[in-house]
Length: 208
Image 1 (spheres, rainbow, N blue to C red):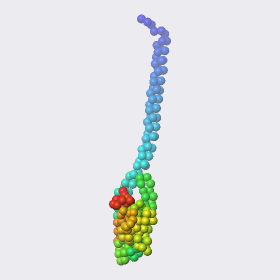
Image 2: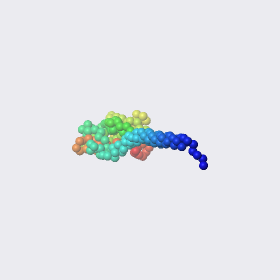
Image 3: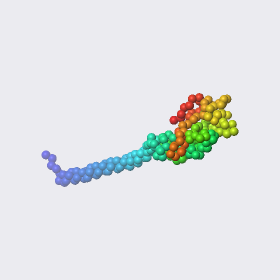
Image 4: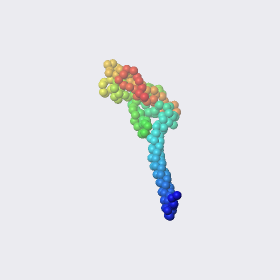
């Protein structure tokens, strides 16, 4: 039997004791690195999720606003254009701007001009007729000539009578685009369902 040399057992035990702290330090280092990695990932994920929520929030607000009824009592889809008292009851069409809030998924611009309409009120009437100012031929803005009682387009010479009927010969393939208008009995505001139609065609198709 081989005898253990004096001091050899002590050296072996000392080596094992020295290896144990090194192994423990390695485990601690691994756990520390993992904790640091998890913390780094959390630091990246949380702002990303928050940013995504901010990015999507206008979409949610736009959807809520589009689907809700106006707070001022105006029917959905209608805009208050003018007071009935601002339209003389003489049968002469007058142009009025259409003001509305412009908004999409990311921007909001309050009270912007989105178009214009002709409002006409006959003598003794509390109702009005309404036409868009856009020519159905190519979308130019038409004017009203009180002397000839005609709407005239300055771009391609389309003309229409006071009731919006196209006058031949005209490049326009259809009459002027009439819009639905109603008068609020309580406020006497003229409310218009303002929409745009495709131009350059005989049929009337609403843009969506």
